[in-house]
Amino acid sequence: MSIDAVARFAAGWLALVAWSVVAFTLVERVRPRHVDHPSVRRIAIAALLLAVNAGLAQIVIRTAGFHGGRVVVTWLVAELFHYALHRAMHRVPLLWRIHRVHHEQGPLAWTTAWYLHPIDAVLIAGASVAAAAICGAGLPTAAWYVVGRRIWSIVLHANIRWPATPLDMVIATPVFHARHHREDLAPANFAATLPVLDRIFGTYRCASTRNTSACETRRSGTTEVTM
Ligand SMILES: [Zn+2]
Ligand SMILES: [Zn+2]
Image (cartoon, rainbow, N blue to C red; front, side, top):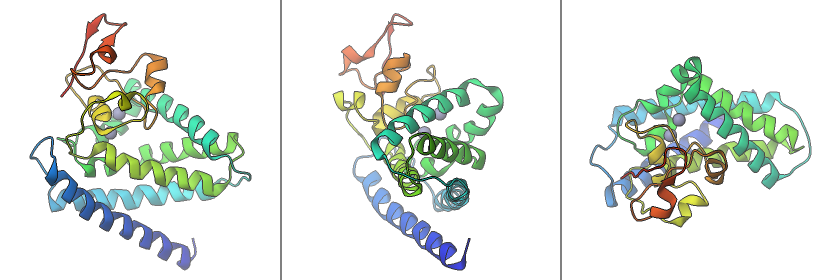
């Protein structure tokens, strides 16, 4: 990487960290689900992990060279790859040892999004690049997808009281992903942005007692609720 590229990367990292600290510290105070807010130390470690993981993702993306551009198709294929990867991470003991870093951070907060083992981050970036390559999409498409996914991930993990609505079946929301982090229930809701994948593969679980029709789980024959 040239000095220019390193400076651009550092500026982007700083802008994202500054924006997230201000925006989510405020948002999490307005409608928190719980009162366990991240400490300065926790924010600093999360920001450091973000820098390492974003740097590794950059290297993966820059290493792959391809041309073209199909944003929506790339997004759909990448989501499918990420869904499969995420399920494997919960199922394969070796991968779980890597992914558990993300799951063992206590109560959810926006900083949880950045608590990823570097190998986890490389695998996610690799899946994004593979999807872009298969779809004939360009490097900017893969990069924008990785950045967009990372920003949405901050929202997904935020400590905000987000009502469960039918929207949870269309796009991943904080309440949808909070169910994924429940340790007392079987792993579910693996999708990063598209819950339809969980619907197709039978891993969708509802997030609220109000959304009862979505709570039916055919596999277990029971009704599962969270929050
Ligand atoms: Zn997980
Ligand atoms: Zn998570």
